[in-house]
Figure 1 (tube, rainbow, N blue to C red):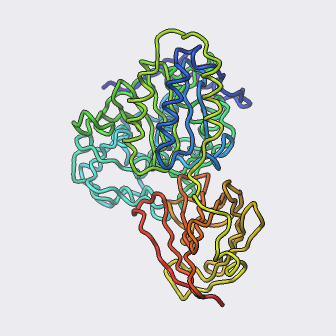
Figure 2 (cartoon, one colour; figure 1 turned 120 degrees about the vertical axis):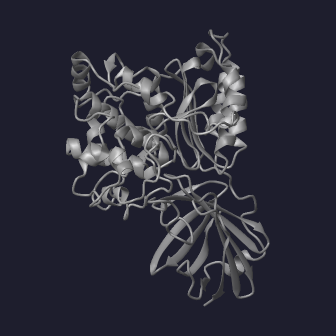
Figure 3 (cartoon, rainbow, N blue to C red; figure 1 turned 120 degrees about the horizontal axis):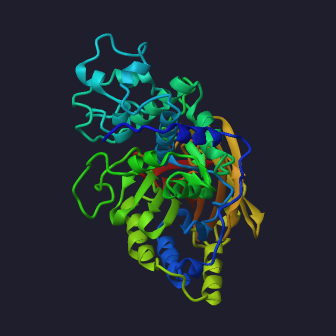
Length: 502
C-alpha cells in the first residue's frame, strides 16, 4: 500500500479541527421505525443481550441517530467505563492525525524515534520495524513484550527479541500500541490524551476522557482509556462518516479507509470475528463490518452496509457470543426504508431498556441466622487476600452495611436489598483485579439471604467490567467466605477463607 499523503487543504482543515470549545451536543435521538428498524425486533435483541451475564451498556445508532440505549444498573450514561483494548483504536487515530499534520509517516522506522533506548547492536529485524508494523500487529515478535504500567517502556519494547521479519507475522501486541503512544508523544511533546483532546475529543463533545500512563508519564495506549457509552458511539460514527463531523474534517478519509481495511491476515475461520483480518488497530468483522474491541466485551462495531454503529460494554467471558447476537438478532432488523410508526412498540422497548440491571442475588431480606450474626465481627487468620475482618449489620428493610478490613484499611459499604446502593471501597477480597485497573473505587452493592445460613453480596465496580460475589456461610461462631469475580485475566477461581467471631 502507498504511504498516506495528505493535500495541503486537508492539513488546513485538520488544523481547524483543533480549535477548542467545540460543540458538545449529544447524538440526536429517533424512534427506531423512522430509521428503518422495528422496535419489536430491537426489543428481542435487548432481551437476548440481557440473557448474557453480564452486560453493562448498549447503544444502537442508525443513520446517525440513537434508536436504542440502555444501561444495566448500577451502570449509567454519565459514568466513564474502562475500555481496555478498545483504547487501541483511539491511539491509532492519534497516529493518523499526527501523519496528517506531517509529524510522522506510517513508514518511518521505529528506532528512529528512540535512539537512546535502542539496544547497543539492534538486529536487522528490529531495524526494519516501522510504525506501520506497530499499527498492524506485525512487529515480528513471537512473544508479547511486558505491558504492565510499571514495566512497559520504549526501552523494554526495543530490548525484546524480534525473531520474525516485521510485516510477515501477526501477533496481537499491546506493547506495540504503547509504542504508537510513545511515538506520538515524542513528535508532539504531548501525551496521546493531551494531543487528542482538541483534535478529536472536543470536536466530538467527549468531555471527560481519562487515560492512565506508565511510570514515565506516557499514555498506556493499548489500554487505560475510560469513556462513556455515547462517547464510543460518537467515535464509531466519526469513522462511519469517513472522518467528517458536523461538516468539519476531523480525520482524513484516506486514513479512515486504511485503518479499517484488512492490512494483515490473522486467520481463516469463517465463523470467527477474530479471523477476518486486522487493520490499523481495528478488527475486520464478518458481514462487511469492522470494530474496535477490548477485554471482557467492550465493543464499537461499525456497520457501513447498514449505516449503523453498535456499542456494547460488558464483563463477559464469551466475546464471540455477544457478537453472534449482533449478527443473528440485530443485523436482520435493519431495513432499507422507514417503517410505519409503532408507538406501542417504542414504549415497550423504552420501558424494557429502563429496567435493565446486573443480576441481583435471589433471596430474602432475613433468615433464622440473621439476628445472631447482626453486628458481629469475624476475624481471619493471615491469608493471601490480606482480609483481616468483616461484619454485617442490618440497616433496616432497605439493606445492610458490610464492613471489611483489608491490610489495615477499613471500608463500609451499604448493600441494598433488591436494589443497588452506591459507595466507595475496594472491589473484593483482593483489591487488584484487572490489568492496571483502578477497579474498586466507585462501587455499588446488593445482597440477600440466599439460604437460611448464607448471606450473598454482589459488589460491582461500575466504572469497569468487574463484579465480585461474596458468599458468607455462618455456622456457630464460624463463617466460611467464598469470593469469586465474574471475569479476570487469570480466570475466576473461587477464593475460600474461614473466620471466627471475636
